[in-house]
Length: 108
Image (cartoon, rainbow, N blue to C red; front, side, top):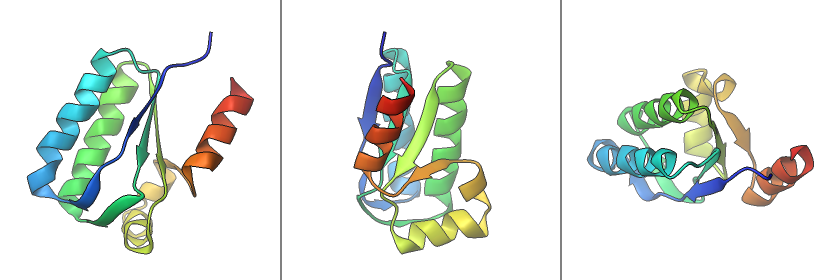
């Protein structure tokens, strides 16, 4: 049976004002039995430490439910934030959604 993949696609600025809504969205996906959650950053222009905190919490939530969380399509600012905080070692980051889909379909 193939895993249930759900995609979250935040947009604009991922900061403290959007963090709560983002966490709720992840929580809802976990409750809907998603095995894999992909966070597609294609439409995110900027993320601050609150957004990063929400992302770490999302990872913990998904893992606690036995799922996996992946990230794709990060821009240079977000990539730099991940590298500066060593979060690039914590999250599995794909360059594009297509690269993610290819990796998931080949491992299933």
